[in-house]
Image (cartoon, rainbow, N blue to C red):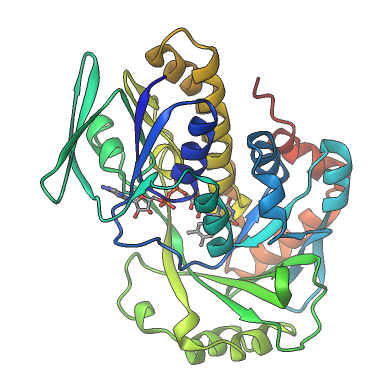
Length: 382
Ligand SMILES: Cc1cc2nc3c(=O)[nH]c(=O)nc-3n(C[C@H](O)[C@H](O)[C@H](O)COP(=O)(O)OP(=O)(O)OC[C@H]3O[C@@H](n4cnc5c(N)ncnc54)[C@H](O)[C@@H]3O)c2cc1C
């Protein structure tokens, strides 16, 4: 069995560490942060991703912290229904649920599943050299380790991707996103229904989490790295969304400035390769996508399962990595493209285009929209 170094302890790196340990590999995960990166908000885990976790044996501990969604609804700023997806139909047809979880809970579940001592913190990788029979990885503290292979799960800014695929710099999607988790202040949301409200001033999502918590997000068009936007706190968000339907203003008002997290939304234009002999890219390092399909972390979970399967069945490491690449390239590229398009439609600001969009979407029968997303849930991995 191989000695494998994983760089990056996000959802992708942790799932992969677990999957490869199950396959009997000797795994060490090197995380650049000094301690476990626990901040974060909510996360939607699609039925496809939950199936990957199930096959890995991680579904059960995760479900203790999760909430099953019954419906996903898109609303106008005045609260009229634009489209509705029956998530229980997805559960029925594909055998797993769409769920939500607090990111910190998921990270803890994944970390606790690993063998003690698997993760080494404060290990920021700064360089690597691939040789015929192994990879040397150097860290900021001066240490260099040697591994039979490297899984680069170092996120959207991946040092490995930037080096191996020159020019693969993140693209800004044109909107920024605030997120927060609050305890339900008693505003009476249906706690098995996630909503997204698409209005002229931006998009607002409300997602129930387990334990009476609510995850919300607000996406607004902005310049990249806008210094004015960086100063926005609850008061500014309230003034953007004050005319949106209930309980959006109430939810914003119930949030502390300190709980806000903000990211400009980025993705990576699909790249042609994930496998480079003894190095393989995984998760956001390989295929970061905008969050409009709620699939970024889900794809990292699928990656972990498929990579482990390929290592089980292929005759050698490089062949396994190539097989993983073959199975992952088209699917992840399709998700990046589709998610990007949904973001452009969801962030429309022109009132005539919004009226047109809402009218068209209302006409789409549920069976047609289910068909469009079938490829997400009906993945054939083996
Ligand atoms: C607003 C928003 C909402 C989202 N919502 C969802 C959702 O609902 N559902 C979903 O599935 N996905 C969602 N995503 C996407 C999801 O968060 C990511 O796809 C996922 O977290 C990627 O995991 P990862 O492990 O690949 O990368 P990361 O989480 O970025 O982890 C990379 C890790 O590598 C470490 N690292 C980086 N460089 C180095 C280095 N040189 N040396 C050592 N360590 C290093 C970092 O510290 C980090 O811990 C959302 C994203 C955003 C921005």
